[in-house]
Length: 625
Image 1 (cartoon, helix red, strand yellow):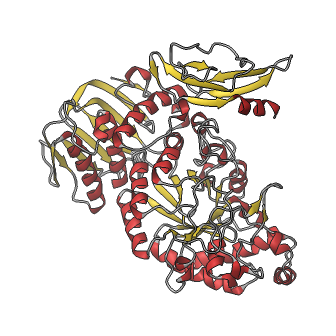
Image 2 (cartoon, helix red, strand yellow):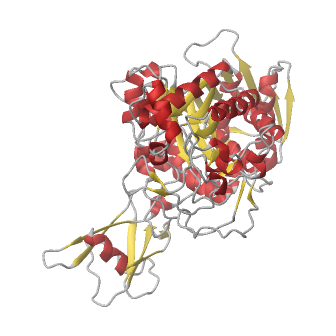
Image 3 (cartoon, one colour):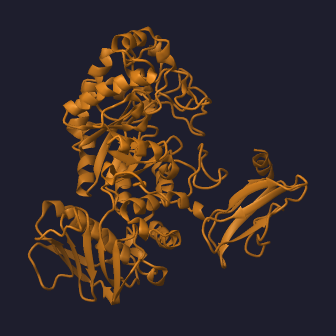
C-alpha cells in the first residue's frame, strides 16, 4: 500500500469531505453483511454515535445492525477508545481501518469516534444517504487506512434565526447536515431588529411583542412600511425548554451552541417591547422591523439610523435588563462563550442625546466609539460575572477592550489579525470567504444581495493567516444571515456546497487543499445530497458574464466557467439552447435587435448548468459601470 492524497485516481471511491490528513488505500473491499454487529465501550458519550451509525447503516441497506458492549472477535465494526492516548489525534482525531473482513475506528475521545463514523459513511455508496430502503445496491467500502484530525478547534456555522424564525425541528435538521462535515459549533443569532427568539423569564414582552412582525414576501430591506392595522403574527421564539432540548441534541452530536444577543445596535425588537431602554423620545411608537428600510448605508459604516435601533448606553435600566437576560442565557447554554454582538451600531441618535453627552462628560469619553466601548466593557463584566467569556464582532476593537474579550472578525481578515496581535482570542468569519448569505452566481439567478461569493473563493479561506501567532486563532466560521432566506430549503441551498469549502478549510491541512481535487469530491457529494433530499446550489456550473466595449463601442460579452471541462452553448433568438446550438468559443457581439442571451453549460452530452436568461439591457447597464 502507498500513501496518497485523496486523488482523482481513486476519487471514484474515496471522496471524503473534509479531506483527511492521511489516506493509504489498500486492495479489495469490505462488503456489508446482512447482520452487522457494532462492538463499542459502554460509554454514555458514545451512545448517540452508535445509534447514529446503526440508523445510517440499517435504514437504506435493510441490514440488521446490533450493538454489543463486550469485546467480540466476530464484530463487524469495532469502535475503540484508546487506553493509551495518541497525542497526534487530540480530542477529535481518529484512525479508521477498513479490511475485507471488518472495520475499526480508534480515537482518544468519543468525538473522534463520531468523526470517524462520518468518514466511514462517506466511503459507502451514495445511496447510504437514503431515508428509505434501497434495492439492488452493492454495499461496499474500499479497504483503506485513514489517520485524521482537525486543523483548528472552532469549526462553526452561524445560523441567523432572528431575521426569519426557524423551528426547533429545522434547527435540528441544520445540525444533522453540519455534523456530516465535522462542524462542531453552531452559532445561533437569536436577536435582531426583526425578532427576539428566546424566552426570558420576567421579561414577557420580549416574546409577546418582540418575536412577531408583519409577514412580507419579496426583496427584504425594500418593503413598504407596514400599515398600523396589518397583523403582526409572523415569527416565533424558543421556550427555555426548547433551548435545553436543542443544546442536548447538539451535545449528543459533539456540537456546542454559541448564543448571540446582538446589542447595542440591532435591538429594535427589544425597544418595541421595552421602549424605556432607548435613548430616543418617541420610541414607544417603534415596532419590530418587518423588512422596511431603517438604515441609510450611503455613507458606509456605521450607518445613519432612520429609527434608533440601539439600547441606550447612558441608561442604567439597560444594564439591569442585560443582567437578567445574560443570567438566563448562561444558565441555558453551557458553552464557555456568550456572543454579545456589537456590530453596526449607528451613532447619529446618540450624538444629539443629552444623557449621552452627560455620560461622556462624566466618564471622559471623547467620541461615540468610546461611548460604545464604555457599553461593551460593562456588558463584558456582566458576562464574566456569570462565569462565561465575552465574545463580540470586530467593531468592539474600537472601544479599547481588554484582551479578555474574544473577537469574531467579519469585516475581512485584517481585524482578526489586528485582534490576534493584541492577544485577543479570534474566530475568523470574514465576508471575503465565509458569508453564506452572499449570492453564489450571477445576480439574475440568485436572491439579490449586495455582494457575491463563489464556491472557488470560499475554498481559498485560511483561518490562520501568515504572521499571526496561531495560539490566538481559535478557528473559523461561515455565517448564514437570513434576511433573504425565508425557509429551511433556502437555508440549505445557501449553505451547501460553500459549507463544504469552509469545512475543509478549518479541518484539513492547507497543503492538502487543491481546487480541482476538491470539486471532484464535491460533485460526488451533490449526488449524496440529492439522495439525502438536502437542497444545494448548483451555481458553480453557471457561466460567468464579463462585459466590455470594443474600440468602436460595440458591446462585447465574455463567458467563462468556474470549473474546468464545461462547454457553453448560447442563443440570441429567444429559443432555449442545447448542445446542438452554437458553442461559445470567443467574445460575443449581440445582434443589433436581440433582447436576450440564453446560455447553458454541458459536460460532454450532459447538461450540468441551469438555463440562464440574461437580458441584453442588463449587460448594457453593466458595460456602463
